[in-house]
Amino acid sequence: MSKKFLKILTTAVASAVVLTGCVGGKKEEQKAADPNAKVEITYWNFPQFTKDKEFSKTEDYDAALIKAFEAKHPNIKVNYQKIEFTDGPAKIETAIQSKTAPDVIYDAPGRVIAWAAKDLLVPFDNVDTSKLSEAAVKASSLNGKLYLYPQGVAPFLMGVNKDLTDKLGVTDLLPLNKEGRNWTVEEYEKFLRAVKEKDPNITPALFYTKSQAGDQGPRAFVSNLYNSWITDKDITKYTINDENGVKGLEWVKKAYDEGLLGKGVALEAKDALEAFKTGNAASTILFSPGLASSHATGFNYKFLPFPNSSGKATYEYLVAGPAIFNNGDANKAEAAKKFVDFMINDTDWGKRTLLASGNFSAKVGEVGLYDSEELKFAEGLTSQYGPYYNTIPGFAKMRPLWFNMVQGVLNGNTTPKEGLDKFVADADKTIKEAK
Image (cartoon, rainbow, N blue to C red; front, side, top):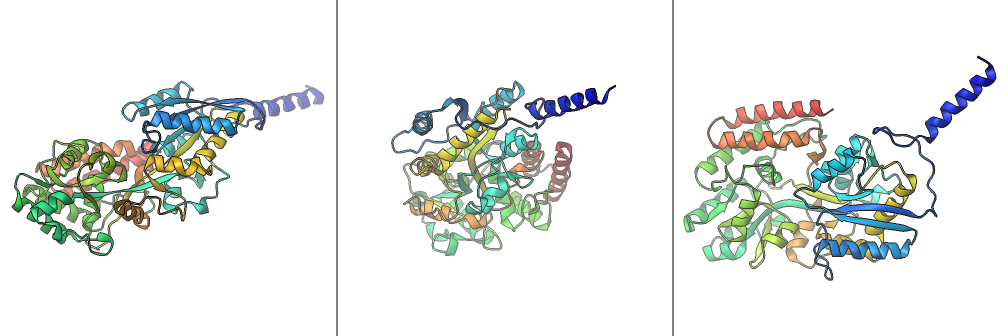
């Protein structure tokens, strides 16, 4: 074989490597983007933007957002598809498998980071993360790279029907006038007992365990009681079976048996929220700014921290924002980045999009967006967000392990310690299996 032929062959192989696009999920080099190219991108979104003053339907808001973007970027056309929370996740996975994933999707880190781990996304390399909430950035990153551009954040906490507690004469037992509204387990139990004594037909609070729907509520409730958490701070293993976690679940079992936490072993989040909405439950262990707008209309509600023996609760929290799929086209990726930047940072549409979601800003210092006393309270809880473990490998397989374990404890089939020890052992296996 001649030296000349070897040189030609080597050059050809090198060129093939450089010019190959995305194939089979592997990262390959792409041609540089052409800033003047005419591009069409696809944008999928769940019903996120329902609180705009002009457009109450999320699809109408998204259409207006796209129209405004296209007016500023006439070389980019955005094709939109609304997806539902019920079957949307399955549709996304089907699209990924058939290599027809959207270019932009507005979602949460749980799914986004799982996609990033499979090399399916384009990272946001040029975003100044120092200007964003540290908690939101950690939740939205993998191996030091940002894969979801966090726009909104919001805590999951508890809520109480103040009109009902006023009627029962137990409002004075709530921590509404305490600093941070913080309260201990003992103070919380006193409130639950008072509600039950005043009206046995009203559930003080409903602790539900049927499915993974809204399961962040019961998990945060149990882990807060005596200051434990579901995972370690580095989110590498499950730790809720520590002494304080066991003590928390023991308290839940005792309170459940005494009728302080309703009869929710066969109920799920929607049942608990409906009971709260209709006045059949005085409080709810699953609440948020978004849920307040849909399940607390017609009465005066108050946000409440989880009871915590240390006097200061830790919160699970929502993070929401856009992510970009790597569809093997540099022009589409750059166009998608421009669209994402527009919806988050445009002078007019950035803040408007955030407000349409009803969430708080993930930008440092962007506060005071809402006039409501309750929303101001919830907005101020950012510093109490706990480790965001929704992105832990195997998270989806952990969730049924949790509610099945709690059902077993409440039904008396296992003790809190035995249940939590087995849960942690099985949950840690899901981490290893997912890697």
